[in-house]
Length: 361
Image 1: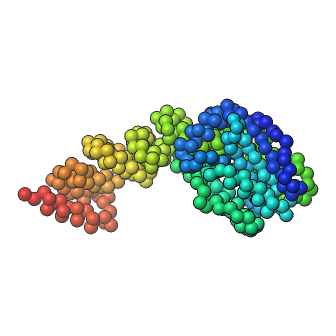
Image 2: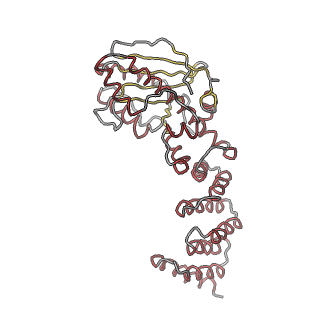
Image 3: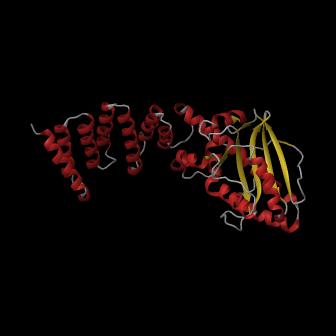
């Protein structure tokens, strides 16, 4: 997808850095949502703030550290009927403090930030540059949402990763034409510092703009998925979506996501986590028969260790249905399983002793 923004003239604050602005009308569609809808839906997942900015950086190195400069900072915001991208570009390294001072003034007009991998990369690196330049700004206490944390839950297991490039291809369905790969950007800036040819960096400005539009779209998409989870038609880790809904106390939709995940989950570890999460939903809503049926169906599925599922049935009969005799029978069955691990023997023996006392007249 081409980045069809309306460019305003660059505003040079000094010979050492410059500020560029580009705007898009809020009805511009990037990925599957208009920008205004993406901004509104994104607010559902955070951050809790009245005025939010979307932030992305380009740097002289991908590993971070005190020797890494941030030479381009893109800040996107909804302003006066447009989505406005402001890019702070460091023309000369000696002007870093001056540029960061201007950036600080802009950042102070917002009370919340949205990033992609900002918690681990962008914000700590910016904080380091501010400290080294003796410019005061506190990123740590400002409300911040790192959309990567949501992407990890929603797509890591399903897609095998959650990089922005992969999510653009498989989820947002955004195609970049003639885009500069991220790993080349530091070397392009070094070349620019040597020759002063700004044309070398025009693809970098476009790359940064694309990153921010996709960040806004992904932010909106996650909000839409959490608001209407039963209407999701995209590839998604249903268990991960369920956990996000669970954290928001939307347990009915969370349970539906867990049930969907279990339809084709064959990995024992992942299945155990999902079944346990669904069982927790049933206990909280006091759906005792659904809880019992869940563990009974797991015995029939045969994916989880049989002794473990039978033990869970014993727990349901003991604590939820208050039937110690039936619970005792299931405990005996679990102890008789051939694949029963000796490391769990003591715990089950204690359960049997307790149930014998409960079941005695």
